[in-house]
Image (cartoon, rainbow, N blue to C red):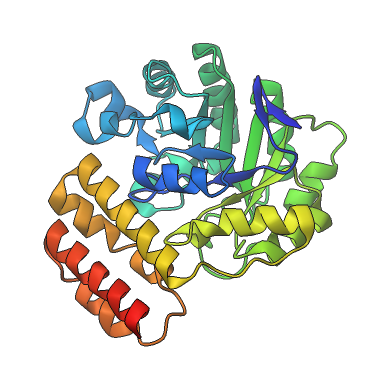
Length: 327
């Protein structure tokens, strides 16, 4: 059994990475049901929370069936991040997570996310301030460094642990890589081997299935794995990895009936939570994953990209279901 503060997780927990416009309540609930041990909200702007901006406060919406759940915040100003942590705590999550890893330009140019990797003293001060501002466990997600010339992670983790964090997730790329090339877990393994490091260390980057997950756990001795892009439209990845780690069995992927049923459920929950227009539009990010490998799906995907209402999208998916059953 692994613990983050007072949170009990499985021996090798699987974490759903925070992703903008992806890890909303509908998707988190589906991933949780299919095996994710710990889920995170979309990352939330500290300034947005302080201003009570609708887009930011809406992301604080969590429910009991998602637990344990972390709220992830990002920002450049230490005082604002402290206040954001206090506001996030009122939503009653299980932990607060700090985003020191987002490589997206609009975040980095404001001095937030992975930009803090260029100012380690500030990164540590901000962490200390947030730990003091909340009674909840504080975790964080970061990268190996700003670029290949500044691979600071092995030194930084000791400082962050001393600042009071309860766990860390490390993405095996630099900010300069964004999501290109391949994730290098070597330094993640070095962090885990450091006898000074007592907190759980989770690895992230390029985990696309059960075999890769098992390889990373065995080779780098991480305490668990965070899965991001590979889960989009594929929440079954958590179930498959769990079964492989437990029994060595590679489960078959979901059949078409299950794919369609879960996709429909996801769509309907998204519309309830976001409203029809946004719910229908944002589901488009998931269709390639839900139907990956299905023969002749390309023209169906194009059609789904242009459905304008819940009823129209449901009708199309129900028709697919009938075609599959009859075909």
